[in-house]
Length: 259
Image (cartoon, rainbow, N blue to C red):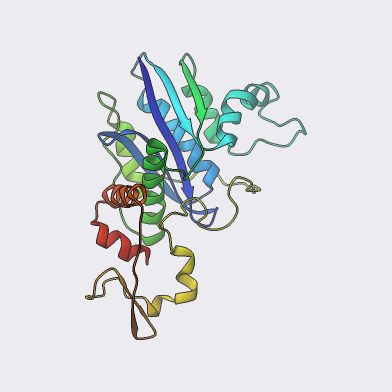
């Protein structure tokens, strides 16, 4: 039997509030995060927690991942880095060393393979993992708790407990190092669909009423109300519903929060 799961990470600002998630289906997923980390650290952590969550199973593992950095690190570069004392070819220390060492331990004796998938093109598993990773990052950004997920069926409950601690601020972030971001440049770039967070500074917190009684399709700016109409395709609507469910809110509440 082959277990197919998506793993994804998200960082608001990169580095900034960050989250990770792996996803098999709606009854089998986990998520967590930190107050401050990079997107690459979120991606690596998602893969690490997936290996840990499935350690009790003797099945092949297919990991869907939209980060070529993660895939290449685990499948191509890590063996050489380890042989060189965890240093790159130029002699410089490897980035995200703690996470990579933990992954190296977790994959020992495991049967697995990675498959790269393009992010934000509607791939169901990738989108579901992305929603949950983004939700954890946003929870840290706003000082709120977020669903940690049910974990893996029949697995140890410890990874889920760890995820809850991460979302509530109880888990420390990996040691951060200076890192050039090449996969996704710019703040909030990891979740472009339905995300209006990058407008926040322009609108200003004092001019946004996220609990306006007129409803989620109305924006208050400088005391004036503006009605917004959002047209969505069937796939976009499905993703909107899915993302709201992942956060445990209604679609209306989710849209209001984005605005």
